[in-house]
Image 1 (cartoon, helix red, strand yellow):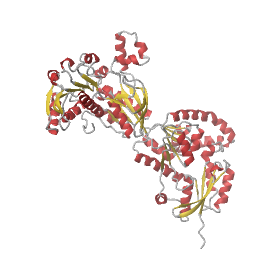
Image 2: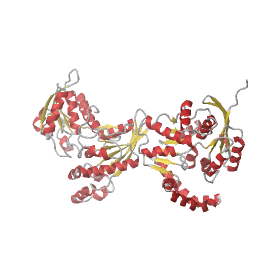
Image 3: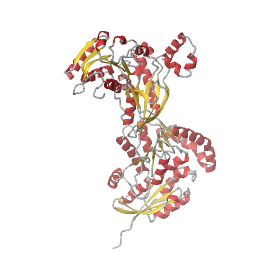
Image 4: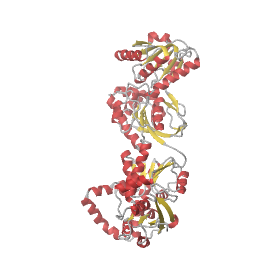
Length: 640
């Protein structure tokens, strides 16, 4: 018995013949013969080929008009595709793949979002080419406002505006009639200045982007040689093209077109193959699409040409801790170098009203797992003194402005630094109103304080520990009712025999004491409004106040060999005070060394070292956890 004749699908493309093929493949338990024929932009030849093959083929796919235009093979409008499709009318079903393409694009985007939540959040995205990426753009716009189009009409959203207004749309069509009648070469020259300007703007946006949406030839046209660290969303990516993108430094390629065969095919070919299987109707229903996609096992392709990589983005809000900061930043340093104190004071007051600005771009953060992060330090101008002089709402407004800036920069999570995280309700209001997740970083700050104290005590070897590792000594937390202090108090109750809680907030102090005694019955807990009377007995002291540089304890009253961990910002203990007691170890806690070759401007710490609250923001970014991890004064100590 003779073998059944393979189902024939022919792809007539307006691009070059260098990718032509004639292959037999298996699809949905059927043998297909798929043929590709390139026409070098010759529309008449393409129409003729469609008519000729339609008499023999089971379905026709037409494609390549956009790539032909990009490569200079064709300078007409998109109506040529419609004419090519109509050329097969009555002979064979034909398609340009738009129905399947739209489904595959949206599915691929949602697939990435499901696998890596927040991946496209606030991503700076550039779309090259015209409206052939509708499904991708639709999902991008659900996740980010930072979308730039190479096409000037799309950049101004003109097609959507015209579709919303039929009268305006008809008027625009009428106005375009004279232009459509012009020869192609004349139209090209008329459009050239605008196209060049648009391309220049797009190249600049692409250099700073996180996501580039384009066909492969679209990337080549814009000359994007350096795609390092970017995600490219494209279709029909062959192994050779994937290798080329890898050489350009691409982190991830999202190929929206599944590739079930040994030869690379486009979505129009897959849709034509599906059309060939529909019983005589020549039309695909949504049920047909769903059934065939599932039965064929088609899947979006998430490709990593250089191995798995993921780069996340964060922002961190800083502010000057004192007037000394002004002398480190130009042009303020030059202006204030010989200025009297009254001018410096006036500058301090004025800067509290200044809008947020980007102080530094942070790059080079790479964890041992290979995860990467980049970020921005955003400065709000107020010193602690000035922030305390205003209502919390004043600072909230500043932080919400900073959040808007962070969103435009592409950040997926934002951290609050220094005094901004303790003002008012410690981040609760800001987290509720901000346009991206916000964390105070206090969980890591508390953790850093305790680890620093533990390490210092261990290295000094002055205190004994029992079989469970509990310190045989007395500990104190100054600022115990604060967000960081309360967590330190709970954990010190686990790690020491006796803990003193110090705070002027009497009612909160008593409530905290009761909670700790209930949770840790072994702990001996004392309370005091001020620390001075009990300082001579303490072995370990953690200071975590929001005193904004005010004196909180008398270091001269501390016994020799005491370990003090200062986690407050500004510090509770001045350098002058610390210098008076060389027999006391004072650790400026809450400082973490970031992994990788970190590059950023000076923040008053050694290279690559940041405050723990910033480190928490970085860790959330590296882990892909874009969430308000720590807000408010009641920190979940399990998170610490």
